[in-house]
Image (tube, rainbow, N blue to C red; front, top):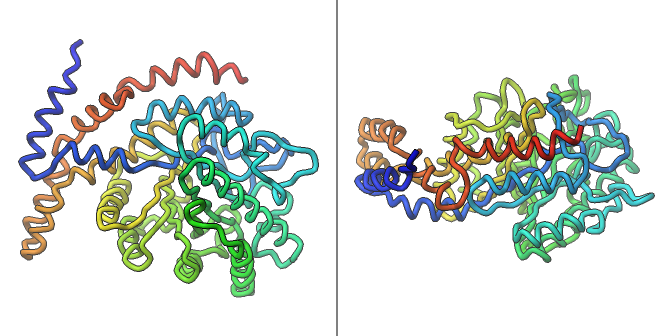
Length: 421
């Protein structure tokens, strides 16, 4: 069968030109938006400490599809396959327990780059950036669901030191790879039922964060972010690090606020929050996932919420805002590499739709108070041939189209992941 991708693209390019949209420029802009691909999709958020810690902190990975990565080397091999099937050049984000090797007597509060040296070598070889986040969960010292806000100063000290250690590791990534590492602080602290005292845990969390960030690290090496959550398993009634808490903390301390699209009420629009926050603070870290009824971290699909997030992202980027996009979902009921690839490519498709939208013409209608024309043109844009542009993008970036990437994944599954048992 003949491949008509280029021929169809030329027709699509002419159609978009009629709307004042340059498709080549849109593709160049898409190339300039890296995704931070979340490594924990490949190991079911288990990490590699070999200490037998249960998965805690409200994290729950459902499914038992065979072949999860059992160590960092296997995870890097899986990421190699996934990254080769996602067009463009991207980053990888780690959780603080996805170490290369556990050294005797060294717990999370004393981690150094030695625990992550294999990741650094791998990233340097691939020419990509690395991000990292502390892991305030799946450890005996997540006591009664509390870490940085725990009333016991000794427990808080362990977690503060863990966060400090991870920030220093992030700085090593940034220094060696020539691109700042995003270091995101998310702690699952909260209560299942209504607490008697809501204030004291938040004061302790604030004090812990202040100590974590007391060590100055240049933003050329590390970009610090703080992440909120509405609720979690075992923390349904009260989350210490709520959106109000962290939005205020980020503004006060000059940190990035992380918006996880699964960490809000289902009726809240994350897309609407982007311009509101960038107008005041100028920069955001996005963790893009898909919540289904609760913060369930489903694989991204090309739905209205994702399109809204992507549309607002490209508008804010065009206005000079800094928006860093990370992925955050995990599904053990399907092939884990397929989950990475499908979700990442859907994020890119949504961004492409935003870049191809005839924004200037739609805005001109708005400027002229022509709200009917604004509505009509916005709906018309939905049916423009963006799929032809996407297929051309895949072709010219050397990755299979949507109909073809599963062949590579299935071959790798038969040859590698199914053999893991």
